[in-house]
Image (tube, rainbow, N blue to C red; front, side):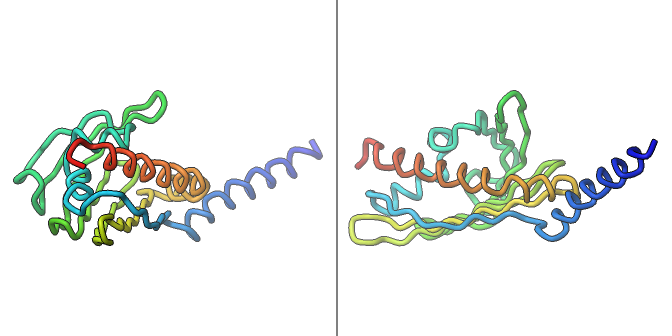
Length: 174
């Protein structure tokens, strides 16, 4: 019986610490740049073309247009994200699309919300792509979970954009 009270206090401290982490770090943001050996038009096209997106972001297994004019501001897509054994449906909306300059897409479902911002600058024969990915849980549990998963989210983002570079540079129009 003497050990029950300290065990309960320890468990409560761990749970409280977990949820406090979600309050301190409510979102995860990844920012980086990548230089692609392609013209800005090819680099930009690989971001808005659904058949190309799942080549560099293979976790997206399905993209279906839902509302609005495709590839225009306000356009909404339903995406299926495959993470291990779980399929997650996400609604993605184009917040801004400025051809050959920028693309901002917000995404959300019942667990999380976020955005992907991409900016394109011609650098001689190459294109410099600056990206920023932000993700936030919709409740304190998911906020804490994402805060704990920050290293995984960062490494997956870097890996996705390394694949993006490979896909763009391997396209036939180069």
